[in-house]
Image (cartoon, rainbow, N blue to C red):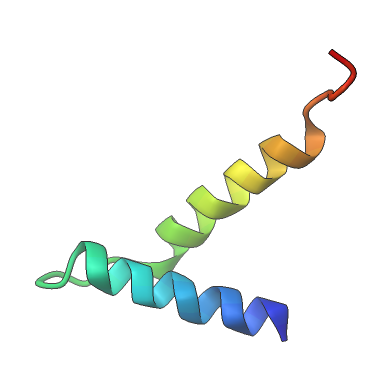
Length: 46
């Protein structure tokens, strides 16, 4: 369910950013996924 909502919001964001052109959803999900991966894997010990 969370994945479905994430893709829907990625589609909405892609349509808002480039309303006149067709922006692939993969670009938005890749950016969000990359940032999430960095935040999850970074070392919080200092």
